[in-house]
Length: 192
Ligand code: FNR
Image (tube, rainbow, N blue to C red; front, side, top):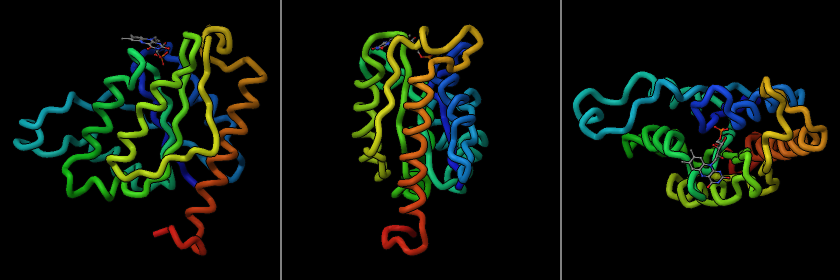
C-alpha cells in the first residue's frame, strides 16, 4: 500500500513536515508513506489555467495522488482554519472540475496536524471537512492526531522525541492503514 503525504507548511523548520517525516518512519510494515512537496505549486489563477492549462507541478501531483491508495495531510492551523498554501494546492488539484472526481472522488484521506499552541490544530482539522465533502473525498474519522505544544515534542532537528506522541502517531497510522486496506480490498463493495 502506498500513501501520499503532504505537509501544509513551506517552512524549513515546520512541525507539520517533521510530523510527516516521523510518520514515514512509523508506518506499519505493509505500507509506505511518500512525501510530496508543494513548494513548486503556483498561486491559483484562473487566467493561468485558461491560458496555459494545469501547471506541470500540479499535474504531476495529481497523478501521484491518483496512483496512490490514500492521502495523508499534515496541516498547520492558521487563524483557527486551514493554511492558505495547502488550500491553494488542494484548489489547484481540484481543477479542472471535470478531473476533480479522478483525483478526489472517494479518495481516502487522513488529516493530522501539529502546532506550538495549546489546541493541537483541532479547528484547522475540522475546517478541512467541508472542503473534503465538497471534493467528495472520504475522510477517515477512526482516529485523531492533534499535536499541541509541538516545540516540546520535537527536538531542534525536527525529530519526534516524545514517546507518548510517537505511540499516538503509530496508532493513528495503523488505524488509517487498516481502514485503507479494508476499503481498497477487492472484496470491498465500495472499492472501485
Ligand atoms: C499561526 N499559528 C496558529 N497556531 C494555532 O494553533 N492556531 C492558530 O489559529 C494559528 N494561527 C496562525 C496564523 C498565522 C498567519 C500564522 C503564521 C501562524 C501558529 C502556527 O501553529 C505555527 O506558526 C506553526 O509552527 C505552523 O506550522 P509549521 O510551519 O510549524 O508546520
